[in-house]
Length: 368
Image 1: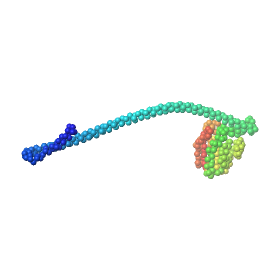
Image 2: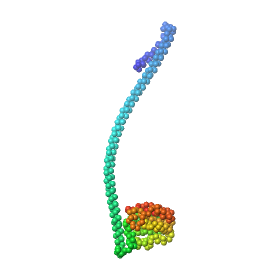
Image 3: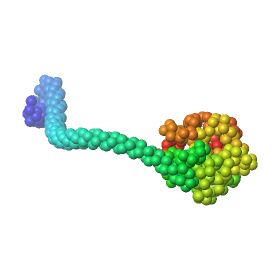
Image 4: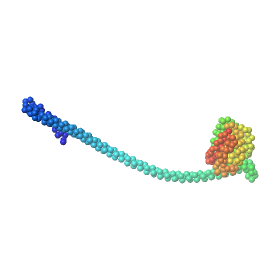
């Protein structure tokens, strides 16, 4: 039933809900009839009318509520439709941006692949160049060894000329004297490089002096005197010994007084606890095992408390093959054993890389 018809029926029922009762005072017949005949029926009719009115009122209210819900439902449907359209628009925009971003990423990936390919080609080229450079360096190193050997031979010949001797007149012992300095040039290269390498050991000696070992530094293999020059530049007292007359003469030209005596004999002649440090470079690998043990023991006796024994020896096979006086490489464990057996309390053996490609060395540092 339409809402307007329900409203009209309710209005009529409200108008006639009492059936226009009670009657007027002048209507005596009607009152009599109502009193005796229709009073019960009229009462029932009024109740029926009221019930119908209430039912229609409730129905009308429900109809109005349903219309309100329909209106709200319609509004919700409209809002949902708007949200759906907005979502579609937003999704379309996001998809567009996503596709655009993916396109840029794919473009960048393609560019990166191209650059990677170019880098790989450049890397191959660099690797080939490095191999060529390594080949050239190896050739130069071989040439440098040959040049150093020729310089050593030239120095040997010059020393003979300075001594006023012909090569055929040189005795075997003299050959060894000439050979020692020449071999140092071949094995260690220019003296400047050797001084630079030796300077890295200077803090060990100065630390020993600070610990109370203020005696001189005794070097058993002065050779060309590079280590003695480093010690002199630091203002440290120096002592050295050599049984090679040419070594003593060369060091004298540098201003050093090297004792003319076999090094171990000179070390043994030193009073106990009189030296601040004992040093040996290119010396230990040339000694027999028993002589090396005696050398370490003599150093332990001659050093003051806090003094240091510094031994540097090559371990490179190429280096040892060039030195005709070298016996073999000394193991680090063996050097430590000798020092500890001689009474050194603090012993360390480390591997050091000499500068300018002079090869790997072992350094024994033993403190009293």
